Image (cartoon, rainbow, N blue to C red; front, side, top):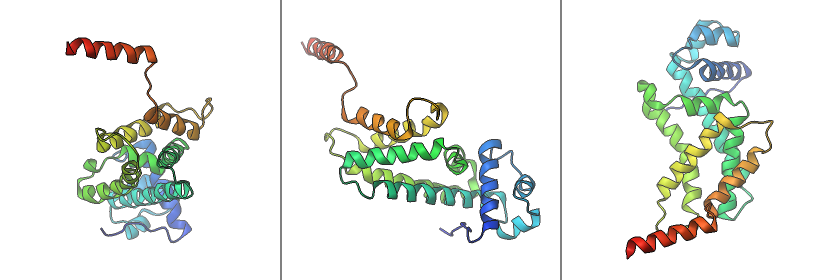
Length: 208
């Protein structure tokens, strides 16, 4: 995959930041290159010199966002050895990234590869780079043989990505505490003892 990432100078940083913000707040389809030029303080022609199309600029935003979250995740889990602790730290890092007004993460979560046919494969590969990090953590978990690890990964990703819609930075929990709670839900049964007993009695009744 040919890299579209061009963050070698502050001017380009400003361009990507402006594009990420507008893609996240206005939507990819509703944002024009002229909008991005105005937001970044650049001439439209200067943008086209580096990025021939809006799709190419989106690819660069994606690549930068993925690089940021992968680096943050690897840093967070670097000193942890317990598989569950590593997963909890990864979840907390993900929640922190998508709830701290990171336009890059919002673009990755909301602009799906199939919405950009010309770059669908490259965008899918970039999303996969991060998901493979999470997959590796889930593969290391000590879970029952009956657990479908792919479904577990998809469930975790879905739950974590949805926090961007309900998490309140002024609320009682921090991203780290939400991540720890999510991990406990995976490790510990969430049903009460009475509910578990009722379920067992029902299964026994059905079996007879």
